Length: 455
Image (tube, rainbow, N blue to C red; front, side):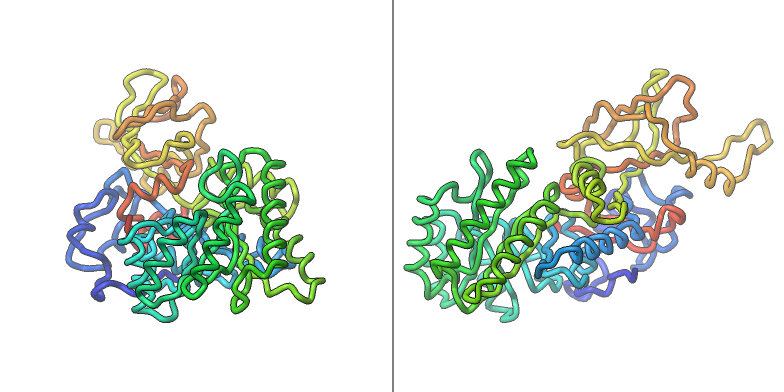
């Protein structure tokens, strides 16, 4: 995959600021050259650890996997992956270049500003747009870019009034989606009474607000049957709104949902809904936008369930998403025979859904006994990268800068060894890094690029 270092940059600079790059964690020696990173080799200890390392081969394979997945369904499904996870413009552009990608899903007005600044023209704000300055940000983008396609959600009459007043004063039109939420869930109307109140307020602002579809998030549900029932309810309400001619007829009706865990169920249900509407000549065109989390990064936590479920269904010929991001760190101390202290912690990796899992082990230094060198660097690299991490190795505690790893007595692990960890939750790991080191694959740990984030 070609790298995207030529995406639009503020001020024409390769990086936001070389000085900030130099002062950041997880990088190598920085000089005045914007290609200085090309000299770094992770396994030769050219990079300060801990570091976030992205395997571009796995990333690209994950993008291709999703394209194949979407093509399995006989419906006009597009995807709007989570840009909020990585907040990396380089990664944005890898994603939006895919045929099935409609645009990006974001969560805040400031995230929308970053994405647009770096050339993203279609954004679904899977959230309510609340507050004057946040509305200002969207209004300013709309004024500066007539091709900017923006959708946000609503779930209350109060928010509709606020949006209507704000954007009518600026003589702008805003497209909105009515959000539905399950009981004890997050945002979204819960019943038909709340739905009716919002729809009534929308009619008073029809000159300013275009009602173009519905939105939902099923990720707060933990049982498959609950998810299935909830999506059925959404499609029933959507069919009712279509029949009642509630949507602006100048636009396709958008129905959008899913997150990281249930996107296969949502895709199946929305395909069934689309097929049922085809027989009705009065039905307007339908636009399905799936929001499958951050599948291109994947992880070994939140995505495990959906990977197993899709494999069981044999939807993808046993091909699977692969964890593309690893956190590399040094073994810092082995104070007890069954515990190794590793030099990374809660400031470097998310732990809200579980602890990162050790995946690779490498010894970067060569022992010298007297004056006799043992082994060669080439043999040592190949041998250690092929070692399978013992099953007993696992983190059981994390502090700010330290992690506690259970090991076996007599295991081949020493102070100064490097261990790579698969992450459990991409969203709460990326936000801890300004610089993501890019390698082609795990067979060659030479740096090919650095992607910056903007949280």
